Length: 338
Image (cartoon, rainbow, N blue to C red):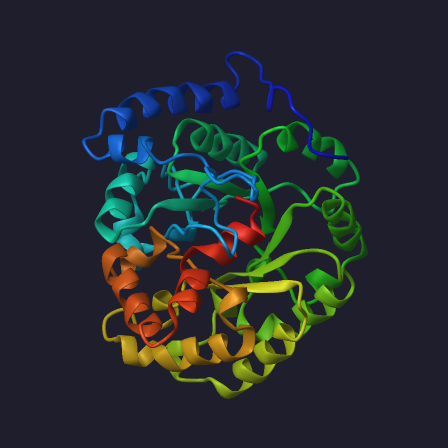
């Protein structure tokens, strides 16, 4: 199973996927007329030609862009986003590319990775359609049933779209031991053959399980989301620190600096509240294995998009210029093959 050119999806007219894509076409029309959109339309594509002097790429020797390696997009419905409870009222609306363009412009973010929020193939196709039509979105981490026996056949049409960069399953919602499941691990073996990444979404208590999981797949590229969601609000750090250092000993794992504000007290957190957790992640992974992400729009319950990037800027300021650009974009570009 390999990447190959061709039509990246097919669908039946009148189907739910057809309705999604029709909506995406309408959405593209609205985004392309957004006052901030022309600036992003001028961003040239990232290419895989490190030998070309004209290539704009994010390899260690090339120019750098600021990349948000983790955000979501959605058409909000109560049925599909039941996890958005009454404490998360700001999230109970649509978040679409026009909103993303505006947020990124304010924070000087040049490119993004859209990540699945629902465990459906329909959403994966929708995100790929949006990425194809919106130059700001350089990649998609989608969802497919990794444990399914027909995973290779499911991935074949998805792989034809170069915006597909990886898959993710919401393991934080699964019972303990989920990552030990033989069928899921067979799926990861199939995923490895495609060159796609796998994003690990877990709570801190699941880190030992994730470490066992990673050890079974030494050639698979893994990305740990949200620094494994430590309980920042409670101040617990020691057990999480030991566990994340152990996982970081595996060189095929990188880590996203994202999702931190929502693990803290939403109303009282400060950059200094979160800084010890950043320090642990930096010590464990180093700049070349850390990537900046926002978890927008989820972070809106505790922060603004610009405030989060300003917090990251404060933490990164003491680092060398090369270390900063690694975290701000080059790690994501390398890992996700942008």
